[in-house]
Image 1 (cartoon, rainbow, N blue to C red):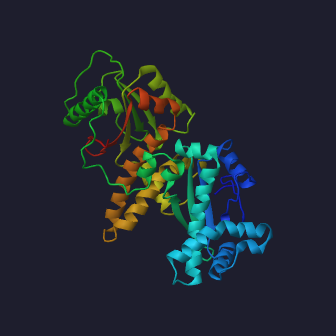
Image 2 (cartoon, rainbow, N blue to C red):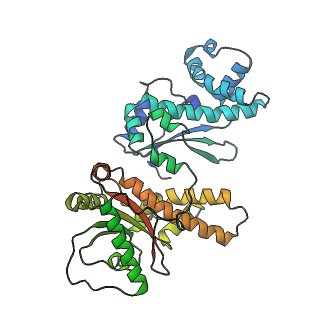
Image 3 (cartoon, helix red, strand yellow):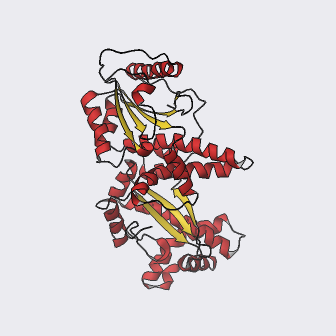
Amino acid sequence: GRPGDIFVLRNAGNTLMSASGSTLGSAEYAVGPLDSKLIMVTGHTKCGAVTATVQTVLAGGDTAAVGGSIGKVLDDIVDAAKQAIEELPDASLEEQVKRATKINVFNSVKRIIEYSDSIKEAVIAGKVQVHGSVYDINTGKVEFMGEHPELEKIVGKELPTYKFRNSEYTSRASATASPGRSALARASLQRLTVGNERFVKGESQKADETSEPHSIVIGMACQRVPVEKVFDAAPGELLVQRVSGGIAGKEGSTLFSSVEYSISRYNPKTLVVLADSDSKIVRAAIDQVSGDVIPSPPQRGVLDRVMVSAMRAKMQVDKAEKKTTSAGRKLKIQQLATELNAFYTIEQLMKSDIVRKAVLEDGLELHAAVLDEQTGAVKMLG
């Protein structure tokens, strides 16, 4: 990374001993004024503090007897050490320390959220995520462990997007999409579907009069055909925004604000994120997570957002598709990354107070869709 990309806080044992210390205050500063979107608690293999705690527990000793602030650090790791020993009673010290390190990381993740009201609120609102990881000091490899497995219990709320992020994604390309919850949304989606069917058949109808907009469509900048034409829409029928990668920019940006203005001004009942089945940007993001050369800063600004979905798709396919050919795996990764990127855009849009209010109170529905570059057909994903 570049200087300034990462705001680093270091302490022994990755512990969080109190709700009023400088570590938590610094984390709140990073999430607040610095607008950081990710807190990563990173332990490391062969950690001296974790090893000492596990050894003390195995010997039946008391970490408090160590004395001073070091004893308090070890005392914070005791629960992780005891759990690791209980789970692996016959394992070697090395294996018990390895397990305790991971447990300790998640314990710190939990404390960060529990001790800080501002971070907890940001997690609930989807504006920040707190992840755990472990760095292998021998290989240099980082094992990313994701969010806390009991995050909903920690924050005391159901988090649908958390469940979506942390469960295996099944492609919806062959599934039947939701027709829409409300009558108005169903009517808008039906108009889009029927219009696209006309476009595919080459039977576009000629519209002489402009129409009031009934839907917002966020399309990718690289799509070769105008979005209005894809849905055979009359002039003014759709509010179209095209952007590289399909991501609506940072909250507060011009692109994001444009969506918010359209919702406030026209009160549409559907917003469709239209992905491209053969997007070069999605392909570039997949290449990036596969180790390609780091692009220029402007390109990174787009790819960094798409890489969230590319990484998830690649990890899922690499884990599941062991017997598939290399070409087959690439196609599967592209398909999953494309669909996930559309849903990720929806997730980002929901961080807007205006969008969220429109969804919860005014009947706005956010749907994902994929445009087939070869046929021109649009598949609604729901």
